[in-house]
Image 1 (cartoon, rainbow, N blue to C red):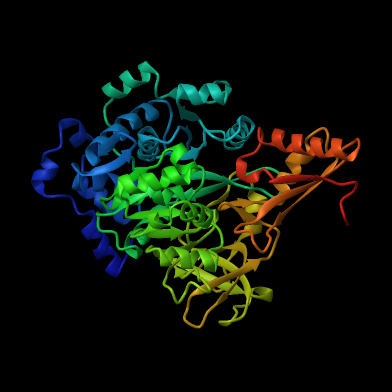
Image 2 (image 1 turned 90 degrees about the vertical axis):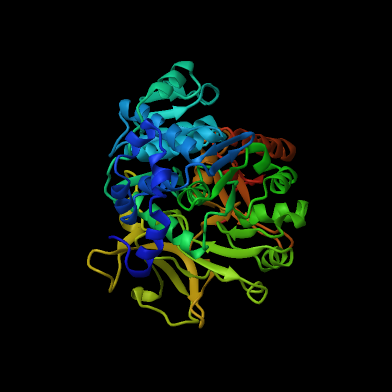
Length: 533
């Protein structure tokens, strides 16, 4: 449904075309690509992400949209690049109802490609080039994209040429020539309930699940955050999150609908807190989003780096000591909460020094309902702990190709609008008297490692597949001095004396890194004679 009331007015101001001379100054290619800017404004108001980006590019064509290393692209340049690339993708079958894999290193091509996929009407499947080859193959087999956009180095390192999909190598000279000559593609009209992306999360059955998130849900989220964070186009957002983690959607797209600038940190800067602090010094971002784990490592390396930043924290529990450190060192702190299945974040709350001792997760975002329910799905009053369910416009379609698991987690909303669903988060929460929400634990065994959701059963299943392992159990340990939980695996079936079994367990862990992303690899593998009952 369209926005209403105050929000329509707020976003009409955001989306109105630029001055007549500014729009008239578009070159012929861009003029053909935009066709009817007024129509795009109306589509944007009805929550079309591709239209949001195109309208903003028309409003601020000369403003810097992206900084990536030594590269800086204006809105006009980024828009033109994505429009021409969209034509190449469309000519190779990308369009409504199709899925396009995107496996590119962090850089301008990554953002241009994601925007191009949106223009075709297709959904994108992020493929992190740093994932092990086995993991990449598993994601591609599960999602079955029609087209994969990558580069020659990634394709060679991850054996991406051999799949049942068309591969487009962006750094192939023939591709570069075709893109330069391509006619720009205007954003295709697509229903709001069409998929925007598919992102995989850890699965308790041993295989990751692809979450299908709609275009309307993404646009609703971005428009809400633009309002909640009071974005005015002056923001410079430092993007540090892998594209395979859904919170990257905020970092890559939010500035592009408000007139701000995306500062894209490279792989080395994201992994080294000293390099990241140096980038903050030189690029002067005003906003940065990160998991509490990354905020902690940055503070440990250079606490003064956060001074003056609007710090968005989410993906795992925000510890009181970390909240206090961020605030004490001059950051303006916003705590965010939400599962992938409800489109990135579902609640937000600004925290001050008085809140730091017991951080809350704020209140629901636009068109989101947060329900704390007890037995029989009965609503619970403030102060009483129950399981948190989320409902509203942010709900995903469900899990790709898994109707049974979708039905298990997405259920009818009691007392909600006709046909409405809610998502069972598995988080235990309570409503405070002031209306904010507090997360107090989990109703199952799921854990968060560096912001990523981890189902211990998926890790255990991968360990059991090793020929030296008979059985495995994986748990999260967190000692009193540990800032974050660590995965520990217990293995049976290993043979030989104690020293040999310990060496085998260490080798199993090393070999697991070829199959699973780093956040799923246990910090320690311990041999046991038998698992305790």
